[in-house]
Amino acid sequence: MGDFNDLLASHEKQGGLPHPNWLLQRFRQAIEDVGLFDLPMSGYKFTWENGRDSDSWVEEKLDWFLVSSSWCSKILHSIAYSLEVTSSDHLPIYLELKVFIPRRQVRLFRYENLWNRILIVDV
Image 1 (tube, helix red, strand yellow):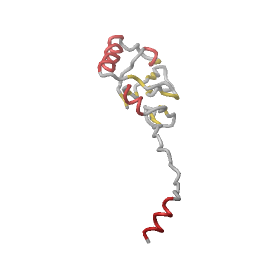
Image 2: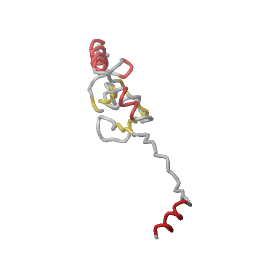
Image 3: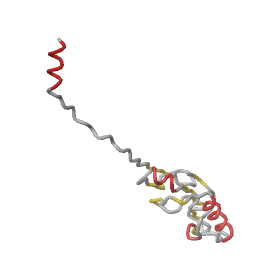
């Protein structure tokens, strides 16, 4: 999780010079080589900006939640967000974990009448 300062695809950048294709390919390949993938994020799609309110305004998605398939099988239904309240050039990103913990079946206590006979005999 965090700021990787790189893009996975050209549509993750708006404004400025295009991101070099070879950098996109190498970042994607590095993530694939270690068996990770991007956990989809809700909210504003760009997490970094520079030059707002100018002709050189650039926005990019530089912050990622990279996860493995085994992580996803254990942490089901998690939701990633980019939050739009910040004083930084990066939007904060937030991961809401929803872990499924199976509950043990509660057994009802059952009293056996036989126990009365055993107690009376022993007295």
